[in-house]
Length: 464
Image (cartoon, rainbow, N blue to C red):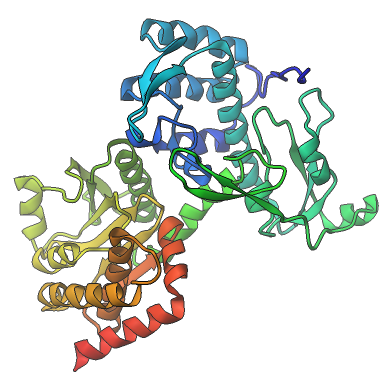
């Protein structure tokens, strides 16, 4: 007989609000509709960026569930409070019990489980434990200079599992890559946690640091997609991630491209990056926001204010006449932030607009995989040169990546990055980037040395 589920409240109504956990959860966007049918559709670290509940295909339904989770985290709800608030709404919406549904990937129609008391327990426990874990990781990062070690603790509860027992008592440095895949929770209803330790506490307790913690993995194949995955042994598939590390990595990536911004503008731009990405994940379309970098109303640390949000199509955004007038004004200093659903780098159109619009001084693109790209300081001739260079870069990428089993969008992302890097080195534009997620994987597959040679070849063409 399986161990009973441990639904001990993660917080109480009288507890202080977990600020970091709330910050983490509210920074999430929504998974796109194609990522909502199966729990395998929205994998691992993606959960740190987009909220999803399998089979909750309608936006309003997903928003209802998200609102209840938000209130549970902020208010310290128990499972019973969460269920009492959400169950009637799901039943009223018809999302309850077993019903027929068509898989958008395979076209197969079958009977699936929608809402149930068990599913509400999973939604509540997984989201709260994950948010609290992200908040815990943020605090760990703030104090790691004094407390540089973490001890894995498996609480001795009825819900403990044998697969996590080998981790119990392991002491591993905070910055070891092991925590990227083993930071708890490591499964549904997992009550494992960590204890942060100083070097002195380590010595006092007689503990030894594991310099080579277990890193074995096992291969899994998704039967719907045929996708192969490597999951650490002992970890439930989908939990082989560190949500807090994923969240903080986005802030670190922004630091790489934030040159030239005062503290206020920096904060506004990062917020718009999160929002643009969240909106894009929810709709699958581009969204653009503008920032007035010389706002009339000064605030402490600098002058800046968001100007406008525009929702576009899958691959473009059409600006309003008012915004176009602003961007034509050479007396203005406007930055724009927009998302790229295909996670491509800056396009030749982005660079052309940067040159053509004298009021536009900064363009930032955020990919749905977390990659960030920024361009400033255009030189005359940038747009025309960029168009020609994109064609050459695409041709050379297609030739060199032909045997790497890359699809066309992946190769186009590499071509965009290579072309803009060459333009930067030739002095046509100031380009900064922080590549992550799938784009980073593609770059590694292509080879950073090969990319460097490609950029050098494009630069030679530019200056010849």
